[in-house]
Image 1: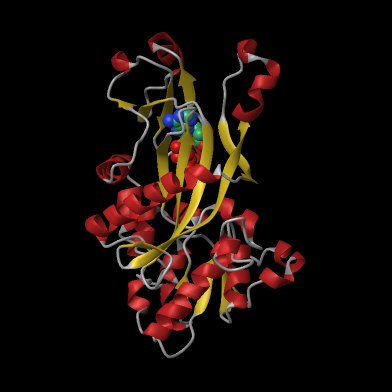
Image 2: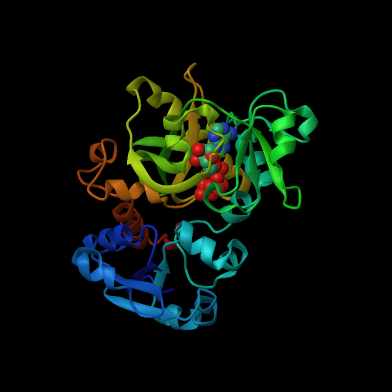
Length: 339
Ligand code: ATP
């Protein structure tokens, strides 16, 4: 990729694409939307976020075959949750097209065991995980491997309830069910910027906080605990949140530890990442997942959040990604933020 020609910012037309295109355009980049088949009509409804160019593929796998064409167009791809999911983490990791962020994070994030090793070795409190149902001594949540959006997960208060519900033809993990308030913390780590909250040689930013709205667990209380209906955890949307201000030091400590350990383990995370947490009634955070890219909850804050506004008015994560690429080009350090 040539640093003297301004790259085009590209992503798959889904998930956080509106915000990514809007932010890229505001920073002066051309934009390209990768779509399945014909360009989606809904972009016509949002002129500010409609990409300058569409690139149609018959299947997501075709992105791999057509990567020379995308490289020729001098694109930088912005990975988001759907992009990596549709293509498959291992295919994405092998993609030749320059991509924002450190691709090495994928192997640590997409494997539950490695993710746990990363976070716990960073000193991050996580829900207890049980090796066998015999060890269940408190309410647990059972997670099937590769389940999308929490589909099929179930809660068991004891061993008997576990046996009643388990489908042991699938691989699963048994995790302590942590009762508390969920906060999805949207961080951004810049290895380039000076000032701010320092971690390593870079800056850690908090751009916003959301909570995922999940059907039907969120509303189950309305028909009573004895309804007999099994809870499901299917994400349908996102709500904005702010934290008690006195909890912010703890939140930054979590972000700092995760980044510092990522630098030691695999050269560091660059750009947006999200810690999915539960804050208990003793005001302790447990982290049940890390997403090492832009998450859908940031869509709430396309015009800024109560946190990002204090970095720069109306700053979205999409815009911040474009700023980081621009800064890297100016500094001649594109290789530090693109892999
Ligand atoms: P994604 O990959 O989209 O983040 P997933 O399918 O891996 O989702 P999780 O995010 O791990 O699933 O969990 C789905 C939901 O289950 C969470 O949003 C939360 O409501 C609940 N949950 C997960 N782990 C726990 C836990 N240890 N205690 C209580 N609730 C939990």
